[in-house]
Amino acid sequence: MRWCLVLSMLMLCLGDGRAQRTGCEQLMDLVADVPMPGAAVRFDYQSMDAEHGRLYIAHMNDDHLVVFDTANRKTIANLDGFERVHGVIAVPDSERVFASATGDHQMIALDTRTLKIVGKAGPIDYPDGLAFVPAVTRVFVSDEHGGVEAVVDAASSRLIKNIPLGGGAGNTVFDPISRHILVAVHGVNELVEIDPGKMEIIARHKLSGVENPHGIALDVQRHLAFVAGEENASLAVFDLKEGKQLAVHHVGDDPDVLAYDAGLNLLYVSAESGTVSVFRFAGSGLEAVGHCNMPHAHTVSVDPKTHFVYFPLDNVNSKPVLRIMKPKKQ
Image 1 (cartoon, rainbow, N blue to C red):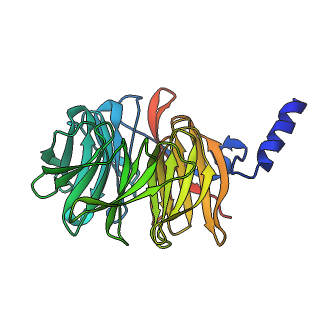
Image 2 (image 1 turned 135 degrees about the vertical axis):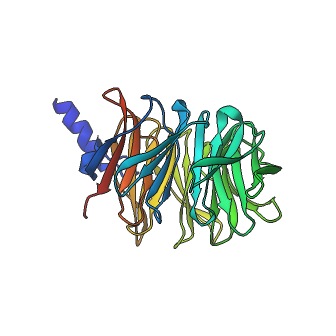
């Protein structure tokens, strides 16, 4: 017991962000545990439409896309036809949701008014993350196993180009400042910039100390990218304006999904290991608030209006649950 106490104190004192991993109630307050439909199997990405109070959740191993009402905390729909759904992105202005049905090797378009499938694009070897570019009405899909960024015309749901990346494709996001697509590339450990109009790579940024970069989140105000390395439990902070890496932090093993709350300057990093890492951007840079354990919490999203944090957990007492939390006041 004495040695355990000493070890815990040492972990708390480490300066690289490896704070003691505790229960998440020490970092966040529980708002609600809401039962979810379907089997107690793996979830994946989420997309928050805060304007309409909807959260779209990929229930990957249940082959369903869940539509959740955040105001009333209830499931609106549990949509089938999304085999092994990985990625999802809501585009409220276009009244569309796009999802990557990896089992069907397709990107699927959903009408948000009718909740009906209105288009499919493919074949895409292993569609994963998605990003939408409004100026050109195109969806960019990271093809993890195909090693390309697939480009889909959103209006016609037609695959129009595959952009070779030189490695496996991690997640992809649209940067509204540069108006470029960013994609994390495995193997070569790069953050790649793509011109969405020309559909060409225009820059490659090496990520130091990050192995197999995958998850990405943006701090748009500071024009920063946060990129998680799934191979070595790392998190890079990259200055997109200057084109240089600022720092590397430690996170949980096999980090997957990131979410950034711009209103509170809080970054959440969820890992396959169940570790949730919370960081705050202060004047001196990104600082670790703490790390905690939450089984199966490898996916996270944030409501920018309420600052509630959403964790779909695939197995709580043998049932799927959407855990809603809020950060403690500092």
